[in-house]
Image (tube, rainbow, N blue to C red; front, side, top):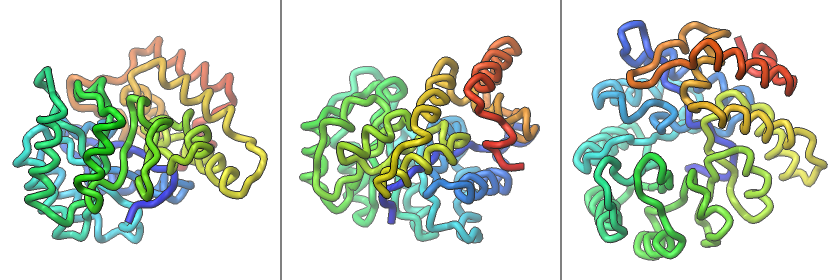
Amino acid sequence: MIKMGVYAATLSVLDENSNLNVEETIAHAEDIINQGLHGVFFFGSTGQSQLISMAEKKELVSKLPLSKLKKNFFLGTGFNSLNDNLEFIKYSMEYEFNTFLIMPPAYYKGNTEEGVFKFYTKIINNIPKVKIILYNFEKLSGFKFEPNFVKKLVSSYPKNIIGCKDSTYNLYDKIKIKDFLMFPGDESKLLKGLEIGCSGCISAIANVTHKLAREVFDDFQKNKTQKSNEKLINVRHTFDKYNLISGLHSYMSLQNSKFKNLLPPLTLLNSNDQKDLLKKLESLKFNLNKNIAA
């Protein structure tokens, strides 16, 4: 059961042949959880989910129960196809995963609230025990959840629609629904979100800011003076100047070459941007070796 906390949209590790390296992907997730995160979501947009095959996703899911941190693992689906979503969810539930981050189908322009409502309805009618975290990311899906539409979904399916990852940032400071989990998709909004009743955050950059983000969360919970929030925000804003997936993999590949592989059309940062990113992070005293475990 997911609860309040700081979560990463975790990275997928690929081999030289562009196949998902299941063991290394799980190992990375375990590593960042051990460094402070409450959990991770596999196969979000940061995990290149839309580019990874069904077979590879199923292979990873089948290995997750072997980890001692299984209870800290959650899944995105990353499929446009309704039937692929259903197949993946049903398969994952066989391994006792029931909470999924699900974005409305992308690609086709003109997604309507009626159509998106029908999409989630079909998932829930087919799999009544599913728990869904809505994924509000207009830039990627072409659809923006509005507050009243979210309230309609929750009212219609209160046992199934349990939360939202808000990466469009038009919801997290507007929606107040009892027992509904709201996670901004950006840790620079973590503290503000907590102050107005949000549940934490689900963020790409938490792959590297895990320690800072957890300090901000814990200091808020303990009503302590914030000592890490300014740095957390500055680091996030630095990564925001680049494609987040490219920036993360470029940054982390300097410490471990296993992160250098990306699925096309994604690429690492060019050498100038990589140097620029590192220079900016160094100016913030955000050191690679101090913020990523070996």
